[in-house]
Structure formats: C-alpha cells, structure tokens
Length: 78
Image (cartoon, rainbow, N blue to C red; front, side):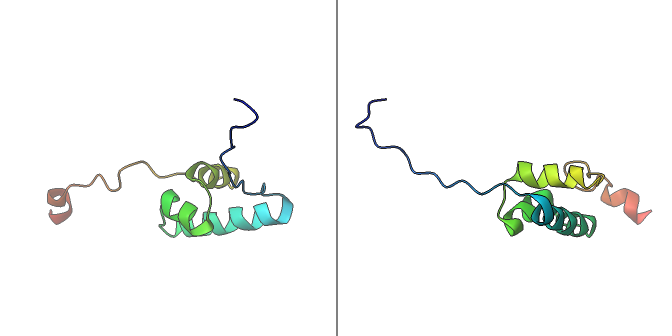
C-alpha cells in the first residue's frame, strides 16, 4: 500500500473495563435469562455478537442451544 492510498476510516469501540464491563455483563445476563437472544442483546448494547457471548460466558450463564424449541407440536398436544 502506498502512502497515497487513503485508509478506510474505521471506528473502534473502546474496550469495556472494570465497572462498565461488570454492569454490562450483569445486564446481559439478566436479559438473557429472561429469554432474549444473544443477537438481540448485542444489538441492544451496540456490541458484536462475539462480545455479547463472551460477556455472558464471563457471567457464568449457561447458554441455550441453537434453533429454539425442539418440541414438536404433536408432543405438546398429547
């Protein structure tokens, strides 16, 4: 890359540290346990899916499996 080539401007979010990280971790864990998806939480907190997932794991939250409920409608009716 030559010095004349313009760089693509990127915006990096500042790292979450200390109290802010703890507060977000607590809020994410509470909302996830209430039924929110990781993707919805990431959007709500304006962070990447990976960061939201990492914070949930740091909060010792047991993550749900992928794909939602596996119960078939027939099994529910019986």
